Image 1 (cartoon, rainbow, N blue to C red):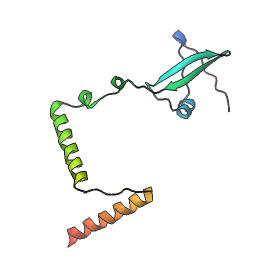
Image 2: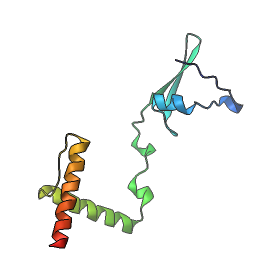
Image 3: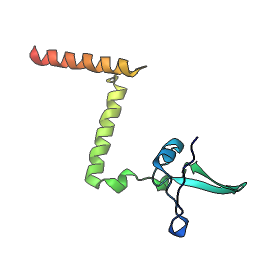
Image 4: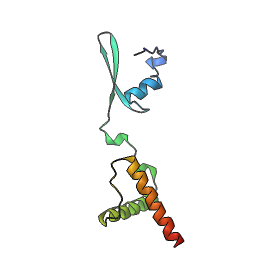
Length: 112
């Protein structure tokens, strides 16, 4: 495990290198716990349980767009209830095979 040297900036800010953020599963906006232990500063990613920290559809869509989204979700749920679904698939290969077969059926319907 190679050490990475980072510089402490104004107001104590440090940039955690991308490689380390990726390894730790840390993304922009994530919370980390900082503790001083045995002469070291340890940062630990902390999942947020505060749902208000996450954007929701009300923040992203107009009321008209929200009604359209809700209608399409309702259609999808009706499809599920009626058994108009595909899968489940155990592997991605099964999924791809199913998609290709469905595309062939649809193409044959158009020709015939």
